[in-house]
Image 1 (cartoon, rainbow, N blue to C red):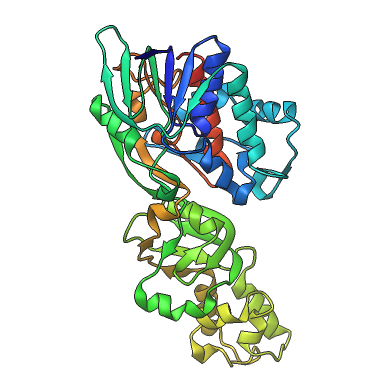
Image 2: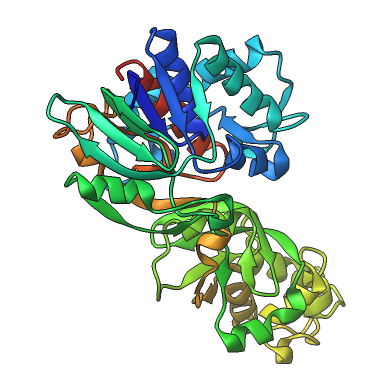
Length: 393
């Protein structure tokens, strides 16, 4: 039996942040992970460049059954605090659209920074270590049995993430721990994930595979503007990933392929200007011709702008600016960036990340029912929740 102060299960973004912070307080910390390498999801994120945070972080950028829960952590360890770490380590980074921040060189820079912080505070990281059971002992201690050793600790931190990208080792372990201790789990599903289409629509739009175009996508009362990407399986691109977190099975989504134009006004003006183009060619000035052909009924393709009626203009505008499609489903956890749902935040302290009922048991990061938008928000939640727990474990 190895006696330590803190055991963190999960050597990902949240777990490493929590461990390094606890180590700074003089706590003896061990991090356990079944993978052969720490921070695998960090390394693969952002195409290997890690979208590590965003210049604009608000509670509104997160989805949870308890929407106020994330506010405390996000306000106590902000994106600016994390950028302070990045600056201290001289990690070069750049901004992309919508305030997203990426490493210039490699996601390894972020992982190495976290590992360095852990090393400074004598945090021990044990990889290839499978947890086989957890017991709560009589004196508010926990016993963690692994396939190698057993550990006893005062504070146990679950930082095992969600179910997304199973090939990276994702599992339901964190939810099982919560259920073992009677902590509710909000039903989970894949989020930030591409859509698949019904067979007939997949065939109809198969010729568009590889086409990317800026659009606004709407589902219920939520909308996003960013690129749509048609794939051989369905619909992807940043805007589709974003809206997937709000979509429910059986619902339709609406797409405006020219969100910054009034298509009715545009076509009326072209008619008034006596433009001699066919409709298809006129619209191809604004959208890929393949997309125009897929969106419009073929009877409209060859109509001259000079001959078009007001009713036809309305029909064409509706086809382009209110294209409705009902996805068959999503690609699931295999390609999902995050997991929606998780450990019920109403059972967790927003200040400490400790269970309200089980003293010494903490949950941080993606395993909780807090899901950020695409764009660095989920990493910021990992940093913020991990930092907060690290002050108390």
